[in-house]
Image 1 (tube, rainbow, N blue to C red):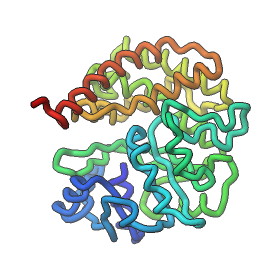
Image 2 (cartoon, rainbow, N blue to C red):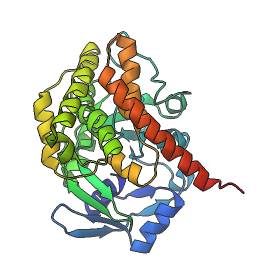
Image 3 (cartoon, helix red, strand yellow):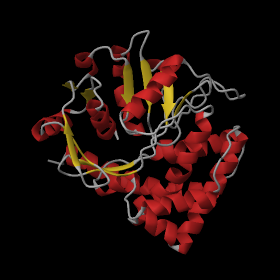
Image 4 (tube, rainbow, N blue to C red):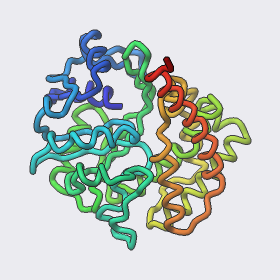
Length: 326
């Protein structure tokens, strides 16, 4: 997602700095820039104004786009203060439930820290909530082994202030996405939109990782479609207990996922690549919220158990590869 957004912003004339791990920066350099294949099969290459492996190299930015996986955010967060000043905005584009969900919320749980996504408060300490603007990424994209990113479908990036009060910066950020060729709008209730996206991610993603099935497979096969709907029903009850509303029905949400086609979810892509799964933000936080509001969620809990076991194996294999036995 970061590559896709960065490429579009580059081509729109923005001065873009990409911060990533050394191997990814080297890969971008070897390809001559960010390479994105659009849904029509056209290949675009753009070279950012700067490439960096650390935030100190990058310096102060007008807008910091946090496009890392949620499980990687605690590693990235300590570098965020080096990127911002009093005029900077931080755009949060993580799947699932964000660490700031209870920050500035009009609810009795205001200020509660979600331990599943920010266990020791690293995110709270390093990312000032007053700078954060929530953003929901609807496009589907895949990172190919050669480093190119394939934009499968979708172009919507709605965003909103986490206290529900639009500011001048909100409009500027929306215009930034529009100028880059995306669809964007200001959300009055960013948390409800987060749940709408998370509805599918907390159900379809783990089922996909466990079974190896695509989105269309899961939404077409009767038993997994039924399981998806049951997980969504449980999530809806939790969300509504927290004041969120849903502008779509479960059936419409599942049909929308089915229409994406035989796309591998990001969690299945991670599983196949041997990477840790984005479980805490997609499922752990939802189960933590269920406990906070006293809602039962047996289907989500059971699928989480299976996905957590899969993740345990992926993490163990990765650790063994990094530190092989003598």
